Image (cartoon, rainbow, N blue to C red):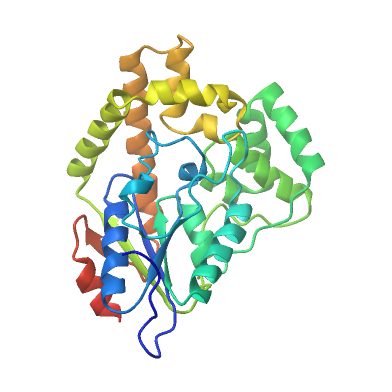
Length: 314
């Protein structure tokens, strides 16, 4: 595929989403789907919905598809942030929807691809974010640095038990955000989908890619070992020069945090790999749980027939 084509007569541009846990084959399916749609007169472009693939230079640890393997299909929202920048979901929602609008303006379908559940949901559903206050957040972050997440989590649990149940007690950023919203007199969004989410774009198709648990675990463990073989440590050394260690979001990414710890001498390589594998498996479980709540998703396995998917909905 070399560029946009004109959709079939009368066909309005759509939003497709290819979602699922890490390592399930979303990237490959998105490329096949884009080509299948193009063969049927519907041009398609891809929009990234993986929070860590937003960052420039974070390639090996995020399994980012190299430009020369993108088959000429336009890709959006890859490599758009420095590693020192914070990846905020509200910012991403605006950026991704702008990308989708641009794709639709060109007469093409937009294919949202990724496994960052809240990022995906922020685009697909009528999902509004509460206000921000930099001064309040700075004060809460100072408390987090001084006292750790435990004290702030206890405060959140007392003020908003429902949200506290949905937030990882170790995730200081999420705890700070929830407390910030409460201090501004707003209800939190509960760190979850609305009870009855409404699609942002009415003509949306959601494809969820799954895999048997034992197969996925083996695949993820092997992928992590491959990251170290493929040069993750060298990538992290380079990113340190770009300020990775000062990044709010990027330095905490699974694999990158462990590589930084190995370079600092706090973990051995086997320990760094084992910790990354364990965290990746845990993250994959959370992803599956998140996407299982998408009532209209069509679940497929890796290597699904993209042509059949395109035909079944066109």
